[in-house]
Image 1 (cartoon, rainbow, N blue to C red):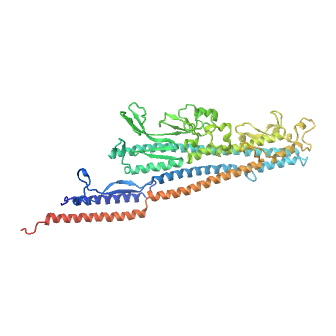
Image 2 (cartoon, rainbow, N blue to C red):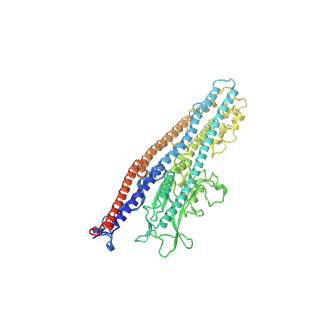
Image 3 (cartoon, rainbow, N blue to C red):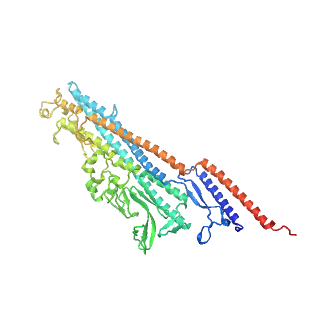
Length: 591
């Protein structure tokens, strides 16, 4: 049985088209070798099956050898490597964010530790000034002035620390705000790409209904450049927090940020009500529904509030939308009814994941990423979470900026309390205070030399009993009260930040936290370095799969060119054979 006359030409035509498209795709790969986010493409080829009638396949010799055809152009990606890369990216960015901010906090603590201008140096000068009272009667009032000047420098150190640590906190907040804005842009962009991708499948007739009634697209192929854009956005989103991606049958994706769905496709009926899908994820039978590509939004403030005070930086919380519209909001991590009890009516400089499911930040699911690093640094109260202000779901036990601020606040309170006690202060108005704190909520910033001491510089040379004697002016050499004050410098005390049972001297306390911040910073730096190394390794492995290799593409180009030339030569050979049949066969004996 003879095969159809032009079957060979059709076979070679497909071979030429396939070779040409393979060359086109190779050229595109080479052209995009440095394009960020570009995924290497390839033409999927298949051997044309011999089919006939209801049996589809036919093994007759006459229909054999029908050549090659193209199924489509696909991307070369590894889903597992994508997931691994994004996980490690989040871990690396969390550590890097913490290390960067801790370096700033460490600089502030280092100033307190400075050899000549730090707290311990100034404390030593105050001690030396007080000791001068016990060794000489000469110029005692001048010595008293020197002592007050040394005390003023302690005040300056505390206030300078408070201002600088607040600056670090303010910069961290600004960075958090910018990060949240960028995250919201990514949510919106991914949602828009979802719609574009599905619309492309529909317009290209690449959608179908499978046996169980599910609408599907041929997602192996399709708008590859749009998928590249989407994957690039997912990579960036993973830098901010842990991401979970689910590819849906139509080619769009559902994205979770933390454990919150932030990009999805939802259905609304003809009355505008959201349709609840059945257990198989389908629109209930008989319901007319329209698909909407929706996205979530994070906000630093409650968008439903009209209270300007609640939108001030002193009352920061992070909200996210449940129904993906600006009007419908729920909280995410702490029960809002408990916020006033936990944080006070005005909050407490907290950026908070807030929500009706009563979970803390870790329970919310934001376990990695730079956003978590920013939260931990901005909200982390370390050991102070045990205080009443930070109980409940809203506590953050990481040693962040508030923790180190409270560490110095604790020192300021102890300095004020112990020197006043040693000087005989018992009740307000007794004239025996050396130091005072005007705002208990911000001890370091409001720490200052008391008016009692400034009005009577010789007060510290007299005991309370001697102060009642009209004959005692402080000019006389008397060491009783001075010895009490000097004992404070060597005394060991408890602090709010130290576990019960542990005590430190004032200078020892400063050295301890200087070492602690150094160790913590080094730990985060080492973690960032290790995670970055892992990220580079995973990234290299992923690039070997999805990236363009010029060597490989050069080899492909030569192979496809040879293939094209061979198919063209075969077409010429078939043409010559057909010419023999048409013009020469059966001519013998004519004429």
